[in-house]
Length: 205
Image (tube, rainbow, N blue to C red; front, side, top):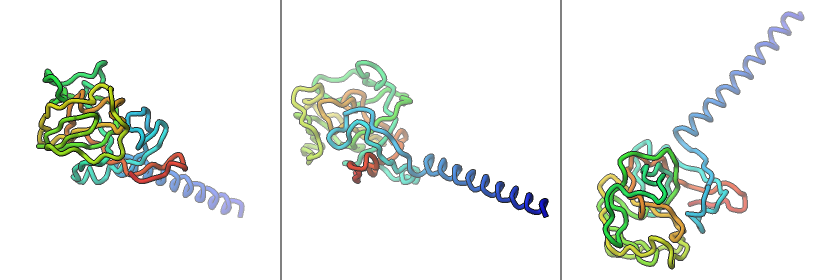
C-alpha cells in the first residue's frame, strides 16, 4: 500500500516537473519568436515613451515578412556607427543633410524609434519636423525641436531600397538615423505594439 502511494507521489511530482518545463519552454519560444518585452532606457522617444516604460514588441509578423510602415514604433539593431561618440555615418555627410548611408555592420545594441521614411523616400528635416517627399509629416506625438543638433537638415537624402529611416519623437534629444543613417530591414526586430507597465501608462502604440 505504501509502495503504491509512493509511486503515485513520484508520478505526480514528475508530471508537475514536466508541466513546469513545458511552460518555461513555451515562454522562451513566445519571447524568442512572437512577443518580447523591452524596457525604455532613455528619453529619446518622449513624450510617447518615458524612461522606465515597458513595451511589448511583436516579433512574429516581422519574421513572417511584414515590413515596417511609416508611423510605426519599432525595435532594431542600429548600425555600428551608432556606438561611436559622436555617432558615425557610413559616408561623408553633405552640409545640412541627414546621414544617407549607414556603416556596414549592425551594433549589438537594441534601439527603439519611429519609422519616418521607407526605401525610395526623400527625407529632410526642418525645425525637427520630417519632410518626406516634399510633404511635412503630421506629428502631434513629437517634442519640440528648437536648437538641438539635427533639428534643421533641409538638404534631402534618399532612403535606399530595403531600408527604413528612423527618428526619436524627442527630436532635439535623440540619437537616430539623422546621424548614423537608415537601417536595413534585416536589422529590424519587431514592432512595439503597447506599453504594459507601469499600470498608469498602459496604452497601445
